[in-house]
Length: 409
Image (cartoon, rainbow, N blue to C red; front, top):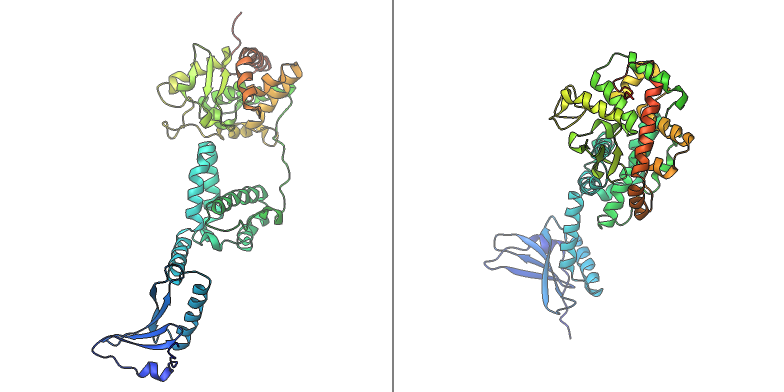
């Protein structure tokens, strides 16, 4: 028959005195008060390991910080774990590790982990834009919070002022990016579920804004306006080069001399720079070769064809051409990215092969195999298309002072 242990009283615990040797007082159910010679009184739970069946001790704290009532409650919890086949010490150690990781896994640290993966799948400029938006709109107030404490109401409150300012497109982008961070955290086991799923639904939606552009028939007006505006010659040349090559602003601004093959009359933009993450080959026309010749005295020998005027080792700002277009009186009428639409409309109206036009614009076919096939098959077709487009621009520039000129017959 098991020995009956009389429960301790608070008075007994308080008045127990140290002895020459450490000794223990039992309270029953495995709870012990261990009293050391120096007077320290510690609560111990003695139990049988549910798997090994060996006797083990686990500390519950020091008296009087942990009262008799608290020690008994902790003992009750430990006994419950043992009854469920769980070792209390292992359970507590795991909980402490989880809590420590939760403190270390702040929103910003997890976002940094996610960003290291994300940046490999997007252009460097787009990656910079992603991180800058989080630094501006999320991290200042939420960055140091544990990832598990990030809840929808907290993020909504953070983004409401942006919505009230009318920055709806920014709100939409930030919602998308913070969602990606939380999905990453879920997949990594840092949180059990993403609490921000569909958070964008609680904000007003931005109105779809079509890229501002002009009809091809109005190209002569643009060329005349641009030839009269006061700007640096390198920027004027970049405007013409971007128009002739049908590239995006950032692709033109970051063009490098190493990407140009004048013998093959080809500009190959590496996939790391492209929106769709594949190499983009652009046939060079007589006009684009003229523009490159114009830039040689300015930047040949440097990395970038269109260098920054302030930092020659860097490239021109991708919005420089856009700024000149505005100064030329085209604000609200045309943006530099919209020049691609002028070319697309003109080429389609002329009846060129639609697949070849799409490749000229670096619009990638979703079927990768077909895309590679088309890239090879349509290169010669694209040379003819780009030559026609350059001639079209030069014809529209007959009254304008441009850098590229028609090649004498």
